Image 1 (cartoon, helix red, strand yellow):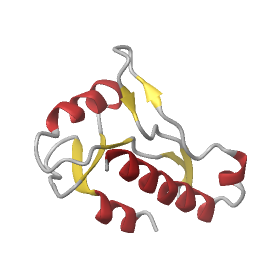
Image 2: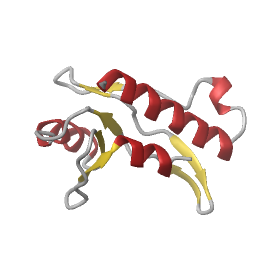
Image 3: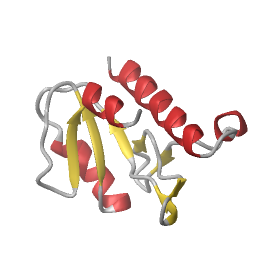
Amino acid sequence: MTSLTEQAIGVHLARSVDARSEGRWLAGDTIGYVRTSNDREIDLAPIPMPSDAGTVMSVPIESKWVSRGWKSEARVIVGKYQRGILATESILDTSGAVWAVPAPLLAMTLL
């Protein structure tokens, strides 16, 4: 389920970027992962996105299909980017630098 969640969020993110900047999905610059210095992976690395205020960087996103125990994954994102989103099965916690958001809800916000 973690891999399926990662793929679904990746497709939604790519479609969202392409809707704002047509042709980027085909160009292949809408999705990318990054490895940390400790060889940990973050599924969806920040990318430049067009906005009304000019080009901004997207928020890093990690996918873990969990209903508890997500904070260790959040530390990886904090260590690399200081903030981000962890797509989860059912956890919603927006109190810290990394937000835990249920993957279906996150996918809907990317539309």
